[in-house]
Length: 632
Ligand code: ADP
Image (tube, rainbow, N blue to C red; front, side):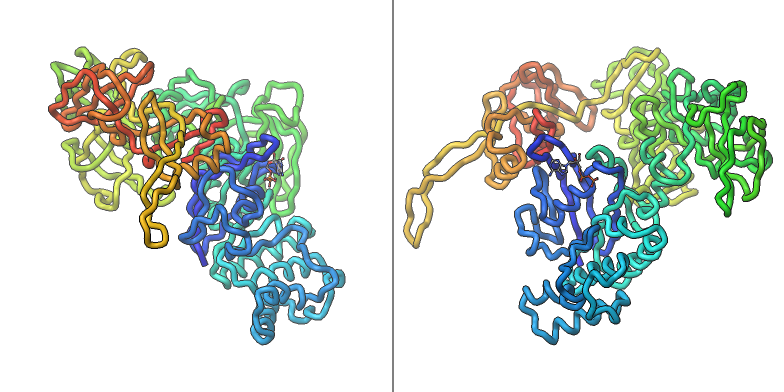
């Protein structure tokens, strides 16, 4: 039993293929994790890195408490089950299962006990004397599982174990593997390209595409809250319907229009509480997603109605799928037109080709994605909300509360759009709010707050209960003031970026060797940034070299740090101070280093015009620039 932790894991193959990019995940003990995605998305590579069969290019892999990047597969306490079973053909089932235990020099009695117990769990006791060729595919896969079980590993890794089986057996084995997981109470990591397998087996699913993790979530959340169009389309059968369209808000209604159709529906604005406001004025093209089960051939089932032209009906026995087109004026019935819609209908439904029918839509389940980036416009934790504000005489009135503006925020009197990031909202302020809802977003509690007519979101701990009043505060250094679409006051940039290099030199140090003090030569590592040097631990230097390669010393490294991770003082990088921005409780020096700007937290008496900036190498996010690989 063990947890598995992947920290910024990358795989770049020698031919330059970046198969896995910045994979980060904490897998808890006893979870059943499924990696799913189309062929070539990097799921097997990730699994093989966990198994130790593939070297990790960059990042840190932990099993339990141990970093295992350099540990041999056999020492990792994992067992892997492959698609092709990988059984020894000349050995019996018993011998196949016992083989690994013999190598580990377990006693005959112990081996016998473990093999028989595994055979019992898997229901293959009667085949123990058979050779693999006398077994069916499903039985062979059970033997492969048995060989893994007897080793009592901390983690089971399964690479498409069912894809060689026929559909019926696959369904049966699917539930057997789920039961096995329940019985063994061990961490399972399972790779498949089949979203149904993923949805039915995983406690959490990692959806991958082109080497990047798209979303990590429970099956239900992937279905209900897909983070982008790819996940929305990949999970669920039939595939979600997608339409090009636009959203336009008029007061408490949002009009949903689908391009090249007559469909234009007024939905309550509350359906779009979490949506980024920029998409609600009709100016940006969006992709609208609605699943077949949220559209009905019964015009009375859902409140929103639209007409479509039927192209054909697929009878599935339990129900029907009606293929139709919202573009009823179109002469053609094109199978893949951008206005095509699949609707679920009761079994036995019959429609003529080209028949125009009225369907009803459940817009409370609408999904909306940016037409270009394909990301959802309404993330479960919204990035920000925009409220109206008025600046007068050095004070901002927004959310029904007047707040004196700190010196750092310069804005002439007038009306503003105030952009408030979710991260900027906290408790213990003076703005009156009511907690109207809460949800758990992957372990993070998100609270819905009502302030006047505005809905805000905040990541808060369990303190404030739903239905209770709360006093909230807004962190002013994070807000943006906009007028007529122009930024008048920007938030403080908390993402400082400089470029540096790793260096090394030989130094002579006094060390105790065999009880005597001796001078020995040692390598010392450091980061050079704009001529200044910062010591770098051997462990960090190794990590950089492991991920960045032998020529790491000649590579540009991007160093990222917050204003709280840099000290403005008397040692370090030479910088000139452009200005000091004062937020009242905190002050920051805006420093120029070459053509870069670095913001640094400073004390209340700070008044220097030139300064030196000190960094702690161990605290930095370090990215190898040429290949975009995060090394630390
Ligand atoms: P999946 O398991 O999702 O089908 P893989 O992890 O096998 O995908 O592969 C991910 C990507 O890495 C693919 O583009 C594949 O061609 C490439 N790849 C896999 N193995 C190697 C290898 N040994 N050398 C070079 N490229 C590889």
